[in-house]
Image 1: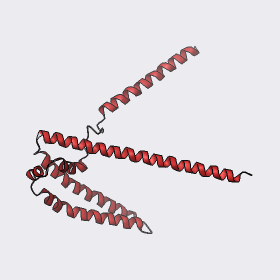
Image 2 (image 1 turned 120 degrees about the horizontal axis):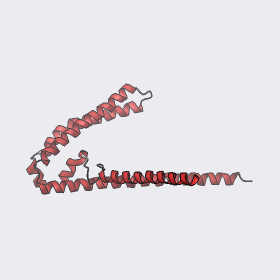
Image 3 (image 1 turned 90 degrees about the horizontal axis):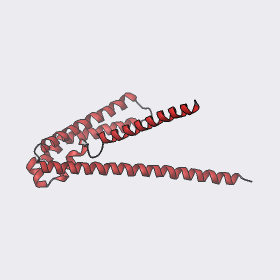
Image 4 (image 1 turned 180 degrees about the horizontal axis):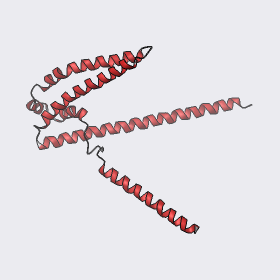
Length: 183
């Protein structure tokens, strides 16, 4: 009777582990967030500008830099003002919750409107690209995304190693304290 329970328990445990493994493999295979299958539009325009020759960019959209600067500059000025308001609210002796929330909301709305202008310029330019240029652009976007992911991993490792160092230092301090308390 006991042996039967162990076999049944082992069977269920094996099924659970196998299902978890299959789910992990399928999830990894279908992941849409992987660097080779996703693009972050927030830096797509700058990546495209760097991946194409200046002559081609001028051909795609003459005077685009001046137009983009003229369209986006007021947004950046308002963005800086919203950041200044957030800083003022955070550094005040008494925090006004409504004013802080308003400043944060303004910041995100202004940032979104500036980004949407850049996104529109990006779309206008991408539809004019040849297949080869789009392939180069996708490659450049994947490389930029991979560099960002590597930076995040490096930063996480650095932060983890700093945490370990501080734990080591704390342990050393405690050891020294214990040794000084010994008679």
